[in-house]
Image (cartoon, rainbow, N blue to C red; front, side, top):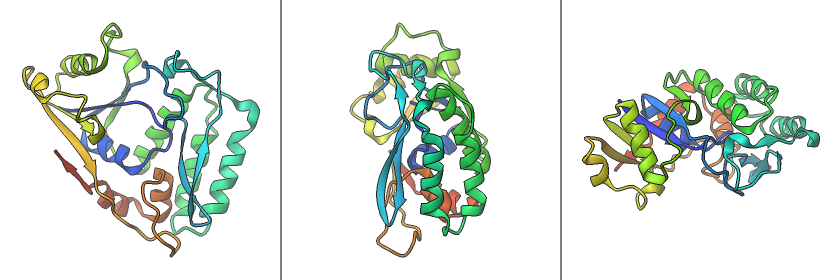
Length: 232
């Protein structure tokens, strides 16, 4: 069984979904410390041919809290504002008619916590792309919060009976292949390749939110892009 463990990110870039598709089970690592100015509640989309950051406002977000403890701040009416931005930016994109209703359903979900909204978003987008990977939150299963860092990741792998663990390439300095091999687990790192696709005719802007990928590509074309990675 192939396993991946990632913090919950809202509308992340395509590499997140490459990892999701590649494994049999995907753990949303929601009971670890929130990271300020990370990618949990923000990402980038294309606005007038340039990347623009969007951010979901949060209430009393702090690195002293776990991700699952962070509430969305709906006093700022951000949902309608973000939907309007996406409408204006992508209404002429070839897949807008198919994708916008999915995004709208996600953003109109009455979730109060950022983790709940993200879980809905990843599930609905996976369904749209016919990705059948099982998705589970770490907070509901493993009871190993006394462990930290790589030790906790390895423990989750053991509890799941994983034969392979796949991590983004950024973790190469954090995880030790030998430590996993001692437990008969093969450790891989996934490196996304930059693959261009037609946007609006201007210079290609890479590594935007999955929203951008979906707006310009059919599900079949997205699956081709999802294969554009190397395992190391």
